[in-house]
Structures are given as C-alpha cells and as structure tokens.
Image (cartoon, rainbow, N blue to C red; front, side, top):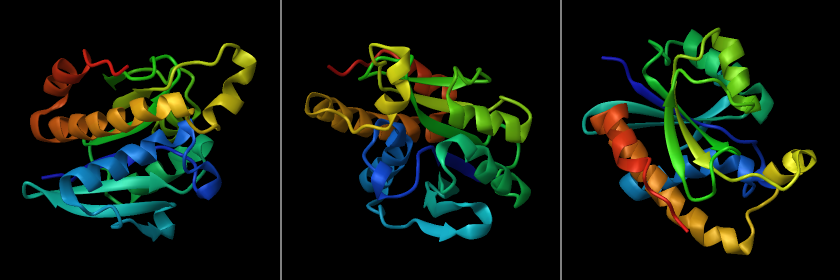
Length: 197
C-alpha cells in the first residue's frame, strides 16, 4: 500500500515564518501537535529539497513535507519526492496552501483543479505535468488592490486575524485527519460549511 503524503507550502526561514503565505507550513505543525505531539519531527533532506516528517497514523505510514525551495519553485521538491518513489500514484498526496480567493476563516478541499493563480501550485502542476492531485485551500482573503497582493501574502496576520487563524489551524488539522482516515468526499462534506469569524 502506498504511503500518504501531505505537503504544506510556504517559504523557508524565520523571515517568512508567520506570514500569510506560510499557512501551509503552520497547518502541518498544527496537525502534528494536535494528533501526535510530534511537532519537532521534521528533518532536512537535501536531496528532496525539503524538511520531512515520517510518522505512522492508525498503522499507515505518512510523510509530512515542507519544501525548502521558495514558494514559486515548490514543484522542484515535489518532483524530487516523485523521483524517489515517495509520491506514487497521483491520488496519494495532499497539498495544503493559502488561497486569496477564499475568505479568511474558511477552507476548501479541491481535486484536479486549476492553480487559481497560486504560484506554488502552478510550480507543482508544471513539474508533474498534471493537476490531478488533492489540495486543501486555506482562505486568507484578498487585499483591497491587486497591486498589494505580493506585499499582502508576505505580511503577518493582523492582531484581529490571529484568533481566527488559531481556530482555522486547529480545524484544518482536524480536516486533514478526516481526509486521511475517511477520504476526500467525507472531508468536503464535513468542513466546507465551516466559517470562523
């Protein structure tokens, strides 16, 4: 049986740690802390261009992955996982990332969907040559102007947003657990209606 792989997108280094663009990393940390109390299990594997945490959940091997490439080159790490045999068939991995088109406090699963302009997802689609993989899109909302998008995603959440993010990180971790143990459709049915305000 193939191992499941959960890939959180973000930018490496302390400069970007708490920015909106790094919520994919934060969701992985939240899952490990909530379900396994193993938040410190990541180790750097240079040949994979990523930090990797290998765990077992209900007897199934799981890999949690944080690419060490910058966001726009996320596909490099995903392709390395593919070439090393960690990614098997197209449906054995989930990509977790921020999404400007979803309001703050919401999340959505997607399968075989376009990138929606997300540079990290675009990089993965280019690297693999297809978009047939699952994603968990975490809403961060949009700035008032398109010209502010780059600055916006690289800024920390505001004080007003932080409480919402604390809640959504926990719910996202629970949603991933549901996805891993009960499948995509069940996770969609259960979590798409949730809205944190």
